[in-house]
Amino acid sequence: MASITEQSYPVSFSVDYPDRPLNRLSTAFRIFAAIPICIVLGLIGKESAFTFGSGGLLVVPIMLMIVFRQKYPRWWYDFNLQLLRFSNRVTAYLTLLRDEYPSTDEEQAVYLEMSYPDAKHNLNRWAPLYKWILAIPHYIVLTVLFIGVVIAVLIAWFAILFTGRYPRALFDFVVGVLRWHNRVVGYAMALVTDQYPPFSLAP
Image 1 (tube, rainbow, N blue to C red):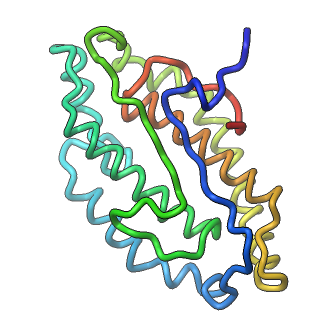
Image 2: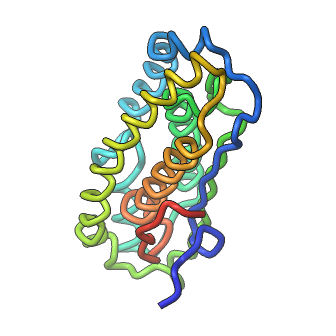
Image 3: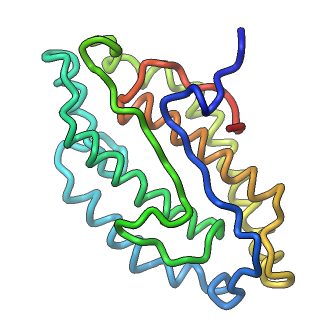
């Protein structure tokens, strides 16, 4: 069976490679500089009603609407998409992929797209009840991969301090893991697609 690529998958993610010297001072103290924006992100998550352990995403209401009404309210989709975009900008900053301070509303150089689903014609109304179970193999693999991300970011931290550059291979690995994670979130949490995510870091 042909592999599913990001071009055909309904969730796409990418980060522009910073092909320039990165800010070494900002990199050195990144964990402290990120505290205010992490607090903002955390507060947004806490204020979001009916969350399902997914960082503030609206999950349960969407699940119920798909199951009982075969509807996916557009403003709920917009909320989840913008929250995920914001969360990914913060993650890119924490993982040193970019050194611009994360914006709460501007796209910057971190791109996440999710196709708005036609719930009545393109989504199985019962799938939200079991998608999270089908995604368990992804959770297991991603847990291992995120350990690799921590190691890669530590290596990149030293590389940036000494050379001002993020090694391209490490950059591509971290972005690939985040891409994989976003596809799984789109499938199992944001519920924008019934297309099973590929086991792949590749675009």
